Image (cartoon, rainbow, N blue to C red):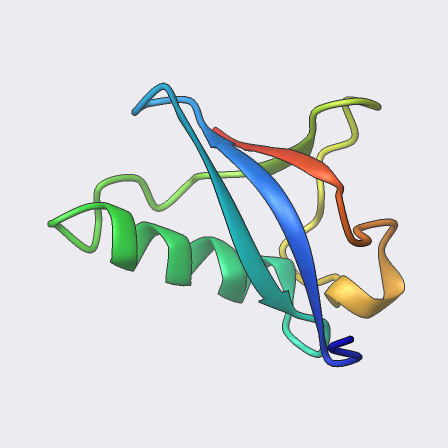
Length: 81
């Protein structure tokens, strides 16, 4: 098992698609958002204001929070808005 990453299911609202992604636990939520934007959209500034939201609880994650200190764990369902 990977201790430095978690496997999450992320729904990209603008694309209407789900992806399973390994996310490093030592990264900030904002960095993960930037990485997802860069890999999914052709233009880097497609949406600088994207947020990651917990699909089950509705919690919106602050961009400065580390994945490790959040409630994001293996199997967490997220939405990229």
